[in-house]
Length: 101
Image (cartoon, rainbow, N blue to C red; front, side):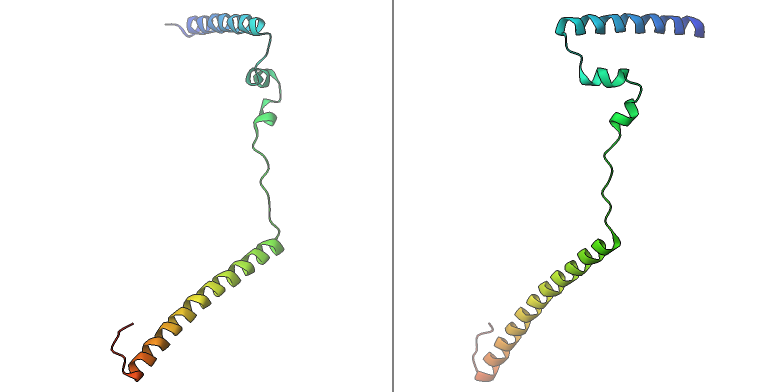
């Protein structure tokens, strides 16, 4: 098939589809938002993603410090539990208690 023939057929098919869309829109008398966006010249501006938020260096530093404090507190609580468990075992051994816990 010739390229010009293919293009001619595609153009005619596009025209038929446009007529069908127009007829359906006339029946509903409402233009769909997607179709309205496609017809505008600035379609790219409408479909761009929202701008990402940017944290300042100071805000990143504050978040980092808060996170470090939280983990230090968590580790401290775990360490104190281990120390308490060791102390309990040590006192049990020194008193002659035969229970392992």
